[in-house]
Image (tube, rainbow, N blue to C red; front, side):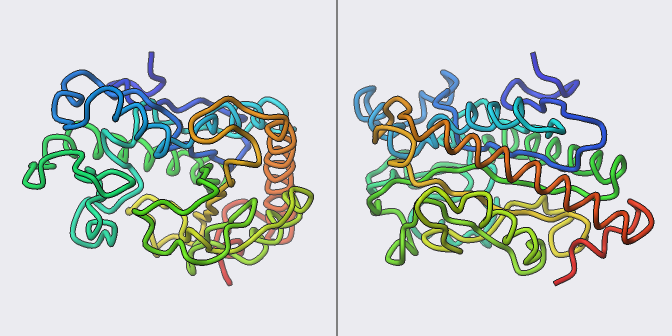
Length: 289
């Protein structure tokens, strides 16, 4: 049962500590596709299973859960319960989305290998209305709640990515470090990047904005509210699992400990900022660059 009254069972907000500003956002961990949506996908079951192996950020929900359980102050978690092949909640739902060029806007029409996934002329509006907008509204509400409770919201976007570049990647020709940190020029202060670099330092290398960049912020707050800060954590899959789509490896425990360290460091950092500001109601001091 979903924790947000009136919302579809396609996502869950898992409560954390009342004083925690941290939201661990897990948008791409599920393989679940409702039967009516499956009917509109062109792939047979075997091909679809293979596509899910490639496109799913496997085990990231479990990673966020492990970090939340171990953290000193429990973070909030917002978890997508459906596959990104239903809708991708982190895409722009309109022409602003650059991934439309490879058929991977909010509603995908192409696979990771650029094969047809849905008919090219499919109308995305029913799926966007049924799944995308409720998800965005609920995530916005979660951020609003953290702002009201703590004066700020820190979104840590938990992702993974394949060791080898897949054909759909538009910017995949750069470095592929064990951990890639995606940043936003408005919402990712350098202090947050530094905390993440320290937390993940023992995992073999940390890169910035390669092969993936950016960080998720609800559109209501995007480039408007400096009290909302965000960082995307992209974990190379060979560091914690058997690719593609296989079980976890011993590296999973190390990653969970590193993500826990980041959550704890963010909580400590935000408290120190609040102390210097004299009030948790001064979010601009956190988001300035």
